[in-house]
Length: 399
Ligand code: AMP
Image (cartoon, protein in one colour):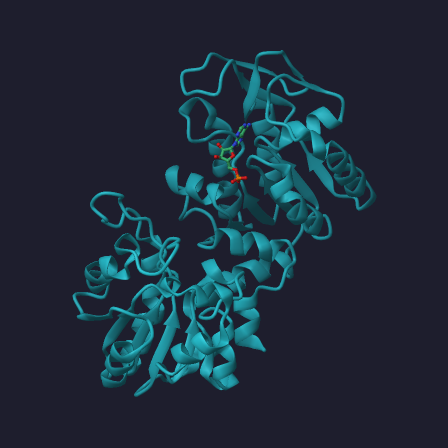
């Protein structure tokens, strides 16, 4: 059992850094996707069940200069109460100061307090020590359950750690699960290990590909970024997405892969379109022979079949980034085919982790989220983890 699960929080005030950065409807300010809130509930519940009390802190959106109503965490109070089975959730209009201190100090066993948006203070993102110290006074123990911000050395995600003895610093259950899944892929992967990398830009994914060249047996490259590779190899890609300043990088990646005996799989065919639009005319063609005036917006049927067969013979799968413009129906077949293959392979015993922004949106949209081993909640954090970086939010708990 983990340190968090083993600990009895009875009579303790747990200050939990959660990631309640949920999307809100622009006009009604209603929560449009509560995934991140739901993900924190088991951690909160465990502490309450133990007879502890909970003080929650989070950021919401990107406030520029101090408090802004549309970024207030007060909009989350009612929904949080619902998620906790109707429990009263107290709210402090400020994350530090008199009201927060007083309410926190009066909190009884089993009670919950939500603090106002941390980013109403610029000190939060600056990682200000004095601000972190003020926050730390609110709780006896600090629990970091915000994997989504674990790659940031902010006051509440990392700097605060120094005000708690090591035995009083915990990962919450979400953070534990995220770290465990990532470790499983990065350090305990059974081979064959296939990394599926898609999305728009090579430049965003260079570091992750380079790190994976040390770990994976196969790397599937799809999405817009595949065309930079195609062009670098001498293909004609028409008006497809291309980063001309990365052609050399693409060739270097291919060369390095050869040296390291990693198979790189590029899409041999593509669904091409005569414009970037949902109602475009489409054709299936070889990815290295795309005519002028046309652009590749999805992998083709042969590519999908080949990729699926690689995925089906894998024991470990990491998926980051869609295979095409899956937001438009005409260009979602490739991403869907990959989702099906990852689900099948998982059913046959592979460990699969889907992480990072749009691939998570894709598996959710296609209803495959419960057919893979793990879907990460942390886009940027997961990406940096797989780039081989040390995440400040994880280091702060462990050090
Ligand atoms: P990323 O955030 O880098 O993972 O990129 C995701 C975005 O890449 C999605 O919005 C996709 O629509 C887009 N995308 C995927 N394939 C293509 C493509 N062939 N051409 C243009 N955009 C693409």
